[in-house]
Length: 282
Image (cartoon, rainbow, N blue to C red; front, side):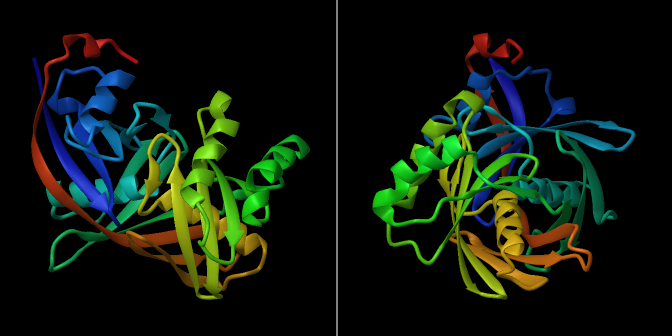
């Protein structure tokens, strides 16, 4: 039976299990990742983050979704790692992670009430029109809801962003149906973005490999890119969702976006994994 030390973190209700690779000899399969993320039989989380080892340009970061599928990165996961690293390194307020989308710097300002205010900066994502085939499929799917089709945003991971006037429809069902249209490529992150005014966006989020989720850092980034491309927002504003609010700032050049929100450690413990077959590497 493997005994795996872990720390659970959260940012805006989006929670992650962190395992430091140097603290365990366990290897990770999709089934083992899904097991530790299971809400009833495991620790429970939206994702598993494997940290380490440290390399020249930062600490290696690998992310599994709750269903055991691989993911490129997560904004809230990055912030959660910031809370963890700040607790482990009291004299540091800046950290660097090596992810599948490149090196990401985390700023972590400690709060008297606990945890940190964490920020990261990413390049402004590319916004692309849907292909004609995708547009036809989506039109058939959403016609009864009277929604305009989404735009495709590459934020280092794939997103479909619907810019909407409200949420009086079955957005969770639409998010699930969007997965069926992207099954061959592992699913799609879906955001429904309501522009309240030029200083605030409100989101509903359906995350691939997870489902409806209270918040998303990469989802906020994708929504910012879509609304910025349509000239709906100013340079500094808020992105709100069920989990809370992120502060967003677009650079003067429009080439990058900084997102800031609280993050904290929820618990630490040791997970006992009795499935010895899970040790086969993914």
